[in-house]
Image (cartoon, rainbow, N blue to C red; front, side):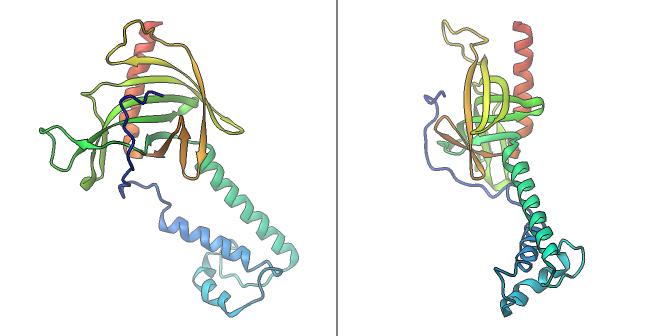
Length: 240
């Protein structure tokens, strides 16, 4: 990973986008867990606290109507199976299948050029991209943020380095195979397209870990990164 242009600092989380589950989704998860919990007699003894916590969620229970805390052994087993299925499905959808742009967390933010707005800042970042048909890209570019307006873009006026390839799920995370396709300022003697390189991206809670860096989902960069990828694909077609 090219670290010469990336200085590591602690990242600042901007409260933008929809990275966190929506309140209704959270409520549904809690309702499902409470509904299952109420039906496990070996864990729950009908304490008073059940009613305190359960009343507001009863109408949201998986049975589709108000649900009581009782139930036959068969219903308990079905509830447990249902809950495991729901949680496993959520885990598979949110973790096992990464998509879109993932930006490096640790960025040395600096003041943006004078012609830009006052609260804008700019920094060099590595970006991972997971596209359709297992398309993969590793991009080094300058990112511009406007925290007050929740705006973030890939700068088109600064140098970029783009690697393209493919990704696939692996037992340890996501296996990637990629090659250098484009560099704004070419290095003497460097061949483009470059040789293919393999790597492994690991899951780390809600982030991704790759080449000693941590990446977080950044939906604000999706469109800009897709544009960069399409441009690099055009260069690759011309070269071939």
